[in-house]
Image (cartoon, rainbow, N blue to C red; front, side, top):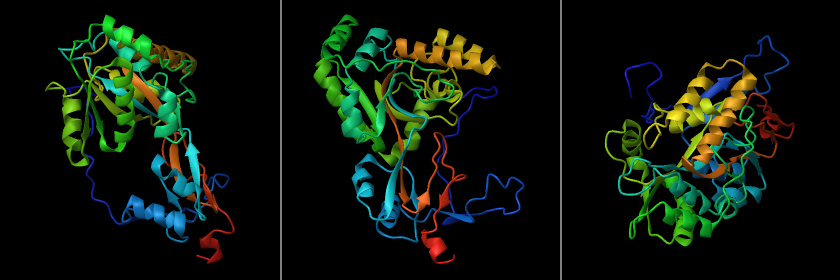
Length: 345
């Protein structure tokens, strides 16, 4: 992105993978208290998500854990004889990236962005879009983040107040709002579009980016060379650590070198992030994280939709321990009744 350190991003998600990756435990490791708890872990790259779900729900001996369960499959897992649903409070957010750089609509006006937030019925979104396995979002940082110190409340669902702010900001008559999303988030985007139409009384044009066009769309967003073809992009983002959320979440979404920033850099945000980046005291770093999240929230730099839980389908004889950030099996164990122990394998 720029000729300086830490100003680049990796986009090409195409990978050549072997059919399986096998991890074998080091039984001679010095830290006996930690484990190993499992002798072998096999990651399957040769099974589709749909087939994996069938195997964990209907059989034993082929698949024990399926990650990234869709809310549409929750009932299937919960009614399974062999599997159980595990929901983990994860460092994730689904939000609307607001393109503050458009020239023919006042998306650079905080009143417009607050109106978009007030148009959303987050309780309905969580209930109907995620089957209850999510939380209404307030700012970027989930309330269970170790280092977030966030005490924000979601924007209220206030259609009348939203319409009033929207008009005050001067949204042009007849100008449709261009909403875009990826295929996996189509259902969320459709509910969001319904809320915008109902609350603001405007036309919403929804574009769903097909998977085969995802890489090109990512390049357009990250390179910021051409005008972006959306007003709001419904987008899912994660954190790789729960104790310094501003470093990976806020910085990537709004920072000057952030790949997903949609609109010009924001001076106060850059100042806060600069202070955060040089702070070595963990307590003060947490305070700055909360201050950054409060600023992003007050300025409504995004439309904060939901914090989805990470959903797993797990064999009922597996004691699965999930993490808020990455998928790890360091503390996961299998019971005596597990097929591998019954078979002596």
